[in-house]
Image 1 (cartoon, helix red, strand yellow):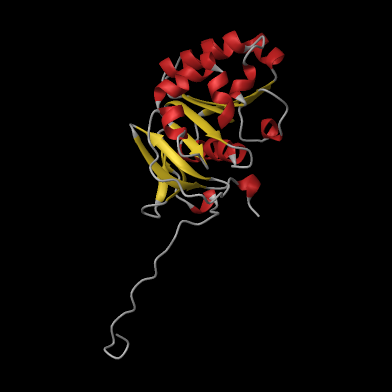
Image 2 (image 1 turned 90 degrees about the horizontal axis):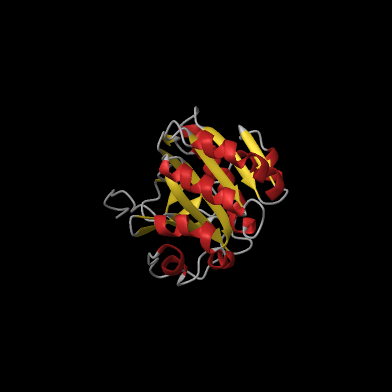
Length: 235
């Protein structure tokens, strides 16, 4: 080929193990870019409406992914109000990305009705990010969190519920709106977790464990991707 003056064949590229969010395009207001797609190596988007279940084992990068989703939505739709809710103290709560943050069951229980009312208006105007969703089970805020999730989904807001994979089955009332929505981001999942959490097969799972590597699930289909790193997690 070289003697004939032909161009060399392009190399076979592979999904990167790290990619910065700010080198990717922002996406559309309702379709923010959150990472890189494994099949096409093009920017991967997600629908920013309704429930999204975020799960993975320890060390899979769930917290970083939650922050990436928030920054991605802010980039694609700057006017969206971002609300953080945490079951326990976390450095995520103090990030400047949030318009409002609430930490702990007691604090949340005191204002949850205001949040329910606030989320019920202006469809698509809010992004609600709940870290440690299943940890609100059997707390004073459990029923309020359930009402907030239901009202927000009904109002077509984007509601992300994050928890470790193993805890979703023990939080039946809080997990149902997310499981029944069949939309999620599963990081480093096991062979059956697509079926057990979102009733969607993930196909053949690679044994490699890479933080931020996972599958976007929606409409009965799963796409492998690498979730981008938000500004706070860049090396």
